[in-house]
Length: 333
Ligand code: PAZ
Image (tube, rainbow, N blue to C red; front, side):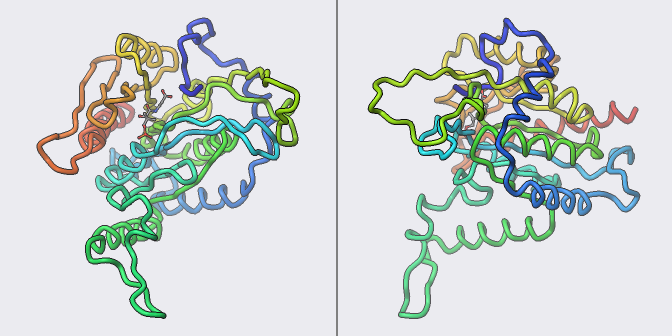
């Protein structure tokens, strides 16, 4: 249901047909808050652009930005949506990676599924409001000592990054919103050229119900079993890579449950979509290890299991930053 380049893409041509892309966007419901999103992107770009105007070609000293996508897209089945198709992604990968990129000086556009994991919040209990706070008396609420440090860190670091203008969080729910906002981001970040990374960790639906053929009201069960035909979501990876952000450093993810096909699928995505890096992971071990696939190498990156709380995203982001630096250097040369 999700996965931008499924096995059957082997039958598709390299370039995504323009008509498919146009009809996807033309028939998509209007993006709510589009003007506000564009405004916040403009402010983010201004904040992260040098006074000379252009953000790159500055002897490798350009501000670096990364657009991190996180969580899963939904596919609505009704316009007044009661039912939708979803996937498993929790958004942990994207949220944790956001923290590590911020730590090494990148500014981050975090495109995340509403309600999914957030940066700086991974150590909070499942229901922070109910589990971290107590009512001390009738008028005051206190943080429980057990969670005080975690709550403090989540609030201060998140607010500081947002206030400084180095973390912009943009939420999505549906496949329509996700792709529309991704397009806005990629166009906004164009001036960063090779200093921008697209780190596409979201699990994106492969199939969807086109808006014009979608039922308006809740689908009724009285007429028996549901027979529904899903259209294929156009392969936006190639559009992003070739048209929306042609100079950026592109990283896509490949998730499989069958180990035997994982690397072949990652290789295929690398070539087909001209990605600079494909990060391969398996469903059950995704928090322990990933395999970074590039044209030159395959590197297994593991979580440091000797350190409590260590995350695989820490060495992963280190490696990405190293390869991104080399990319910028070659670009300048
Ligand atoms: O969001 P999460 O931490 O639960 O999982 C991360 C992930 C498995 C969704 C990501 O690493 C990934 O592989 N995303 C791409 C999935 C795909 O389209 O193949």
